[in-house]
Length: 136
Image (cartoon, rainbow, N blue to C red; front, side, top):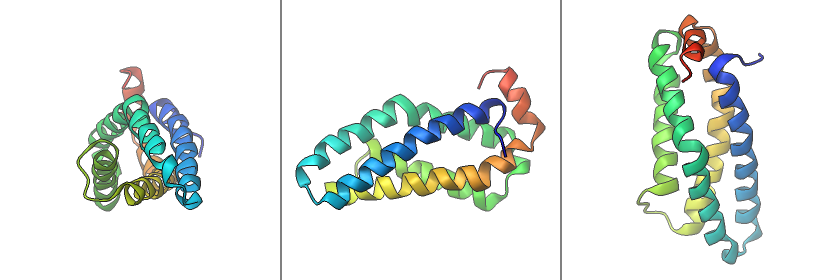
């Protein structure tokens, strides 16, 4: 389904997240521990430049269209946002290789879930179009 309104820009940002997730996977599979610190820096940068604001806009849309989104989907998205936030910029119990790998795997799965499940639910809600006019 073609995206409209605020979902269009969010979908475009998803592309950059999928590109990063692929690079993370390749770095993790390389077995080269020297690339992991640089990859963690890319993750932190992507968080600051893209994901922090991206997640805030998605969460605002979830609140606006709560009646159009099933509770399981909303709970999953919010839980994944919290985990990705912690992996990107919070204290983490995982060692660097596991942290980088988990972030890449979760980011890719999260983006695909939003595109396939969440966004079709959101797009059907009339508040989403009015949110575009208010420039979420």
